[in-house]
Image (tube, rainbow, N blue to C red):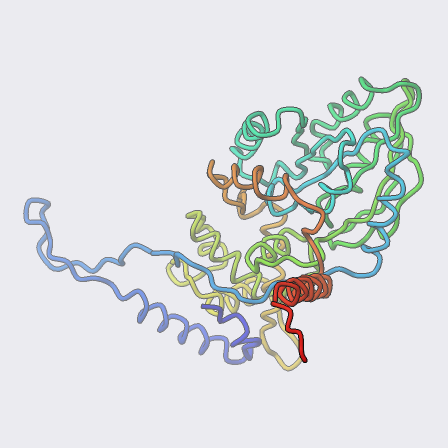
Amino acid sequence: MLVAKTIRTVPLRHASVASSVIRELYTKADSPAVVSPDPEAGGNESTSISPPFVPNPHFTHARSINWFPGHMARGLRLISSALNSVDLVVEVRDARIPLSSVNPKFEYLVGCKDRLIIYNKADLAHPTTQSIITSAFKTHSPSTPVIFTNALADHNVRLIISHAARRAVGNTTVMIVGMPNVGKSSLVNSLRRVGVGKGKAAATGSQPGVTRTVAGTIKVLEDPVVYLIDTPGVMVPHIPDPITSLKVALTGGVRDHLADEQVMADYLLYRLNLFGAFGYAEYFRLPDAVPTNEVHVLLPYIAQRVGAVVKGGELDLNAAARFFIKHYRDGKLGRFTLDDMREEMLKEFFVKGSMGAEAGEGLSRRQEKKKQKMEDRRRARERDAAKPMVIKG
C-alpha cells in the first residue's frame, strides 16, 4: 500500500522524538521472537532474536504517469520526415529497463529501415542483462544487431562506428532516436569523441527533455564519412501500465516532480528489498541497520543523514527522496535491472509487445477515445444495417 504522501515533513526539533516513534514502529512490526535454547549448544537461558526481514511481495500503484509535451510531438513529426535521407537508425534504450524503454512509435516509423539497437547505461544494469537480452534477440530477432554501451566511459562505442562504416557507400547518415534520458546526447558526444577526437556536440543533462529539436548533421568519422543526426527523446504518449511508468520515471525518463519523488522512493525501496539489497539500512543509519518496507520510516532517517532541512526546522522528505533516487541512478546502491527478464516475458515482448507493435499503439488518451468513438459508430451502423426493413402502409 502506498503511504508516500502521508508524511511530507518532520520538525527537526522533534527529530529525537521522531526517532523514538520510528523505533517503536520497528518494535511493533518486527518484535523479537523468544526461542528456547538448544541444550546441546550450551545455552542456559531464553534468547531473543529478530525474525528475518520479509519484503513486501507486491507494490500497488494506480496512477500512470504521462508526459508528452509539445516538443516531443514536433520531434516525432521531424523524425518521420527526415527518415528518407537516413541510412541507419540507431535506437537507444536504457539497459536497466530494456523492455520498458521502448517506444512502439519507433517500431512503426522505422519500418524496413536498417536499425541498430543500443542498450546504454549497461554499467548500471544487472551484469546478466546483456547475455539475457542478446540471447533473446538471437532467438526472436536474429537480423537486428544489438550493442551494450556506457557512453560516459566510451565503452563499446567504437563498435557502433564500425557498424556504420561497414555499410557505408559514400557518405553515411545515422539518426539517433530513443525515449527521454536514455543517453542519446551522451552517445552522440561519445561517438564524436571516439570517431574524430573532437569535443561535445550535444547538450546533456540529468533530467529528460534537454534536446528539444532535431539537430543538424554531426560528423563522427572521416573515412568513410559518417554523419549523425541527434533527435529529442520521445515518450510514449500514454503508458497504460502504472508500474511501467514508475520504472521509466525512476530511471529518469519523466520529470521527477510529475512522478512524485516520494512515490518513486517508495517503489525504489520495494525493489531494493526484493533484490535483497539491504545496504541502505546501514548507510542511512536505520535502527540496528534493520531494513524496512515503509518509505515513511526510511525518509526521515535519510533527511537526518544528509541534512535535508527546510525553513522552520523541518526535515525535507522530498529532498530525502531525491537523494535516495539519485543514489540509485548513480549506481551507488548497486546494479539492478527493473524489467522482468524471465524467458516467457521476453517471448511475449518480441511476439506480442513492442517488437511487433502496430501503428495504433502508443496513442494518447484523447486519440484512444476518438478511436473508440469511431469504432462504436461503425458497430452501430452495422447493427442498423442488419435490422430487418419495415415497410409501412
